[in-house]
Image (cartoon, rainbow, N blue to C red; front, top):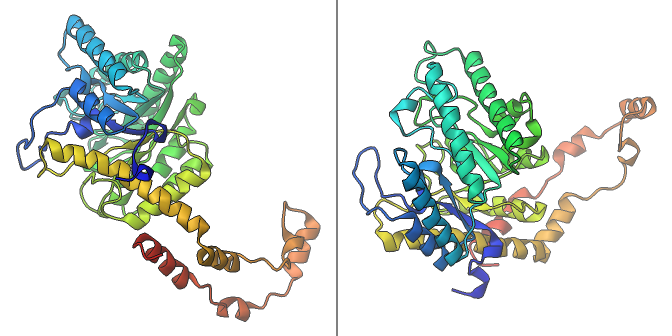
Length: 389
């Protein structure tokens, strides 16, 4: 492995305990790998050059742990972080695994479940802040329905809004420096999940009491599950100033949530994503929310994690080659050339500008006849990715 592709903490690559700790269970099969303790997972991530590790509350502390057990577990975990030079940039709450949340957490019809979800999240926020987290992610894994006869969607959104307003106020009251990031997903494990896309989340955020505290955590697989373009979702979030965190993996379009190794399914889409993140200067963690194949043993999990980071760095180098390639850049300049004829219409509205534009005579036939050279440009990108440029 060349130094160019060797992960370093400065790259801000992170993994969740639930990713590298996944035991290979799926809906049709039992685990294929043994449980590995969070302490040992931190050690492994430190050895392969990761920057940090993220967690749900119960990834670290079992849901039925006593206060004394939690104190010991957290102390051991902190020691492992220090010993291996890792940080915890993000934390979240598991509000989907326990049977109590079978009808959702913040949107459940049972008010006791909603109150318990708030309690559990406050305690999890405390734990995340104790470990140093700056971001707190909300994925509403059970916030949805199988049948619309069971819930009023407007009331469900109001319940979700109440929960986030309450938790924002809690964070402010505690004096925590913490940003919330909402993660969208269209379906699975519920038939339909509320706020299923990043765009839906962005619209919802503007209805919150403290919208300045809340952004999004878009995930490759979740947008691709809906047949959408992930880059466009990320760009919209960035444009809105709401790209607080990001989940990197890969996914075959319109399938179940596959959480494949980053760049392994659609390297072209991954290339343009890396290009965007690097060129706009995104400075947050690059979090890999993916899982090793069920076929892998623990050595294979290590290969998987190293592969996620290595692919990102390879694509980052491809971006540099793209930017330096004279033929690609010349073609882009030609495609985007401006002869200056539209300069009088540039800028904000004036009545004179509008009148002048209405009277301007365009050569519509010439506009339609012009070839744009997009085929050639795209082929050059393919050749770059395939290693022949």
